[in-house]
Length: 243
Image 1 (cartoon, rainbow, N blue to C red):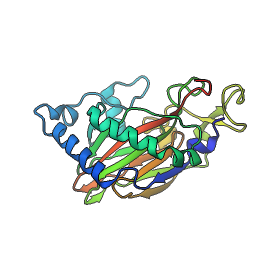
Image 2: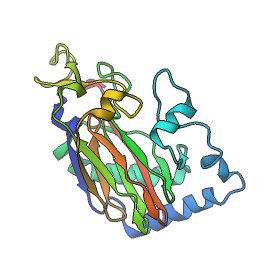
Image 3: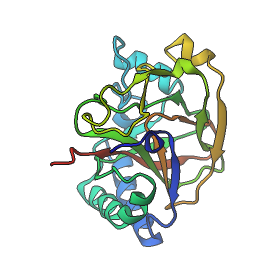
């Protein structure tokens, strides 16, 4: 049974990547970023992993990343294997705080330069909280810290406005009693979300540390003020108990 605490919780896995793995990943991504067509991941990028129903990719990017960023959703296979192997190693630690998680979705590389950031938003239990598999949490792993800025943050809120409804027939649908589902569209495209009081908690993890943040927890990235900030992100999901 999926408990609401998994979808609004936070956690960390220190040494998710060891120094050798970090160096190997940095080398792999350097090769991608110095290729002749690398500009398509940055200034010439026209798509985003973030979506807003009824909005174009360009409009969604303006909401989520108003100053842009580098985004590579199809990382090299060798890099994907390193990160998936790290997820498997970390599974026992993950199971203590988010026991319903069974799978890690493909990883994405993101990089921020001065002035670049991600605005506050919820990922939600995507793509459908009553279908399987279900997105339970996000995960990010810092590869390179910025000289200043770029901290990750989560935001908590007590407002009823955030919550849409209780999960229907929780036992039948794989949820523990008391499960609530957040509203869709919880991002800066919605006036109600922008105006909702929230409390921000920020963190600057060491390279190689994995951060976990529930899919029903608001989060974002502060602007980089000096240097560049690089990390990998993915989403952790629960498969159907009988799969």
